Each structure stands twice: as C-alpha cells, then as structure tokens.
Amino acid sequence: MSTDPCLILVLNSGSSSLKFAVHDTGMRTPLISGLAERLGTDGPRITFKDVQGKRTESLPASDHAAALDAVLAELTTRNWIDALAAVGHRVVHGGERFTSSALVTPAVLADIEAVSPLAPLHNPAALLGLRTALARLPNIPHVTVFDTAFHQSMAPEAYLYAVPTELYRQQGVRRYGFHGTSHRFVARETVAMLGLEPGNHGLVIAHLGNGASATAVQDGHSMDTTMGMTPLEGLVMGTRSGDIDVGAVLHLMRTGDRSAADIDTLLNKQSGLLGVSGLTNDCRELESAAEAGHPGARLALDVFVHRLVRHIGGLAMALRRLDAIVFTGGIGENSARVRAMTVARLRLLGLELDPAANAAMVGGAGGVISSNAEGPRAVVVPTNEEWMIACDTAELARRATETGSLWNFEPELVQA
Ligand code: ADP
Image 1 (cartoon, helix red, strand yellow):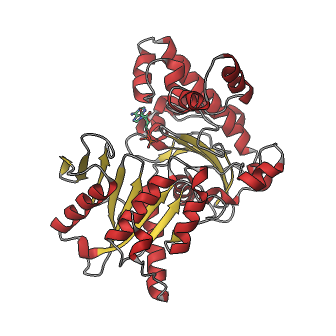
Image 2 (cartoon, protein in one colour):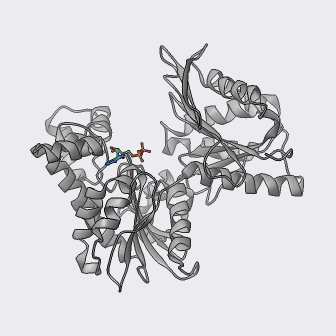
Image 3 (cartoon, helix red, strand yellow):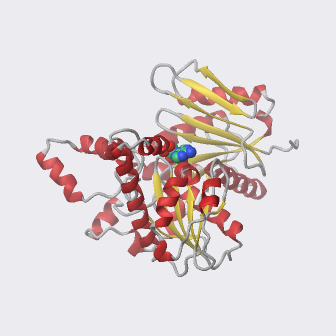
C-alpha cells in the first residue's frame, strides 16, 4: 500500500443493515468487507470478512452509528484509517436529478431528500448512513452512486407509462429502472471481454439475483430496462412477482379484503420464485428440489425463465445491433441450468449453447457459453457493484481534490 491515502470505503445502508467494503485503489477484491445487521432490533451484530476468513461480533448499540464505529475501529486497528481517501455511498433512488454519481455537498443531500418519497424504504436509510459517515469522517470526500442513474438515458417512450402525463409531471410516476451500477459495470466488462467497439455495440444484460432485472445497452447507454417506478416491475424475482396485471391487483383488493400494505407484502415478499414454488426463494435449493421431482420447484423455474426470455426478446428490439446476451448476478453467474433453459429458448436469435463452457462458468468465472459462429453470443460476466462504486468514488474524489472543490460540512448539516 502506498503512503498516500488510497483506500475507498464503500457503504450500503439499509433500514436494518450496513454493508461495507474497503478497496485499495486499483484492486477489485476488497481488503475487507462485511455486514452489520439487525440494526434497530435485538442482537445487532457485525461480520468482518477478509482473506483470513470471517469474524462476527455483537455491537454495543443497535444503530447505524454503532455499526460504522465498529467498522472504523477495525480500520484503526489495521492502521488503515489514515489511508482512507474517500467514502462511496450506494443510494437506491436518484430520481431525475441524478444522471451520474455525485460528490456529496449540502445541495446533493437536499436533492436526495427531495427524491426520497419515490423510495420511502430505501433512501431514508441511505441518508441516515450518509449523515452518520459525514459526521464521523468530515474531512474526506463522500460520493453517492445511484441505482437509477444509468437508466436516465432512456427515451420518454421507454420510461413513460401510458397514463395521463400529469401523473408523471406532478408526482414523478414513470419508469426509473434499478441495478444501474451493476448493468453499467457489466456492460463495460462485456465490451472489453468480447473486444466490442465502445461506440458501436448492443447488449441485453440479465442481472439475476434475489432481485432481477434486464437492460438493453447500446453504445454504453441504457435504452430500456425491466424494472419500473419501483423494483417490482419486470422479471420474476426471489420474492417479487415482477409484472402482474394491475387489474388482478384491483380484483384482489376489491374481493379479498386486502389493504395496500397487504398487497405490498404479497407482491414484494411472498411472490416470485417463493410464491410459485411454495418452497423457497433460493434458486439453488429450487434446482435441487426440481431435480428431486418437486413440481412447484419446476414450475417456478419455468415461469422464471419464460418471463426472462420474453423480456430479453423485447429488450433486443430496443437495439440497433445485438452482440451478446449477458448473464450476471448470483443466479446468472452460477446457475448453468437457468442459463441453459434460457439459451434454449433464444434460438430465434441464432444462439446455440456450448454445454461444456456453460457448465464451467460458475463461482466467479466469466466467458462465452454459446457455440454459434455467427450472430450474438451468450456470455457470463460476474458483477462487482462495490468495485464500480469504489471507482466512481476515487475518480470524483480525485477531481474534487484537484479542483479544490471540497466542501467542509457544518456539523448541523450532518446530524444523523
Ligand atoms: P442479491 O440480489 O441478494 O445480491 P445474489 O446476486 O447474491 O442476490 O443472488 C442470490 C441468488 O443466487 C439466490 O437465488 C441463490 O440461490 C442463487 N445462487 C447462488 N449460487 C447458486 C448456484 N450455484 N446455483 C444456482 N443458484 C445459485
């Protein structure tokens, strides 16, 4: 490690958790990472993970400040605290205000607050984490990286719902898209891996994790994506339904005595792979169950793949050319079965699976899994959102330091 500050702390604050990673500039694997969980409840704890292994400790208090203090104490013990150059914060919703990552200033804080009604569960938690970190580390640059920013390149015909446009103008009802940091990173990686032209390529990227979305990327820009105003729209996910006829939702509300909160829980927490299988939201467990003949597990995987293929086909039509279908996320990077089922349904695009390559692409390996000489290829590209956040943070911090545009935060602005 050089003596210049070169470490980037990446923070991802949820309502009851704080994920963190520390990256040395230029290194994709974090020096240390971990998760503080059960914040706001009994038994808060923090897990640290590095090359040596994992260690879990209980936290003395149940809030984000206690979690961050534990992270900073760990960095102090390792003599890394003075090497911290900047902090990068993941923020879910940037609305239309943020089209790229931003150096944190009081105006940026106010703008994040202003778009928070669009993500009432996520943005307040991010703001809490951000304010806590600003209070603890006021003398280094902080940067926010938004899940929505990459999709701000979508054209109105892709982002508007066909509802009266005053709903868009007055209440921000439109499609924003999420997972943007992952899609942006994976798009760059794919262009490099396949030797595509940065200014002339077309990709459909399927980020398949617990949350799942697919995006059409042309020449490095998001043209369309499956998630909408919230992360509920689009693909079948672990516990989210993805697309559903709003008429069906209205029917349930009218006839089933369900409140909006009940419907929220139903569609976000009890649906998707879990709801269809009646078993689990975990794809790996579903695969084992399907192999053992569990009909619900088979059905869940079939519905998952059907919806995915349907969206890949639709997204491809947003592109001028199609170079690759890209699989990423926990399922995309590891499930040879889901990839094989998907590619088998994409013959119309000229795709042929290479079964040996497909079987080999697990556990962080990336590469081509199709065998057709012509036409688009199918590839696996592992995502690394933390690293992308660290890169943006390092770059914006460098520019801010060079131009002397660092902001000194007044204590009252950063009260957590
Ligand atoms: P998150 O969206 O929470 O970040 P991940 O990207 O980690 O989720 O993906 C989690 C999903 O990946 C789970 O459904 C899990 O079962 C699946 N997964 C992980 N490893 C495998 C595997 N070897 N085979 C099939 N599915 C896997």
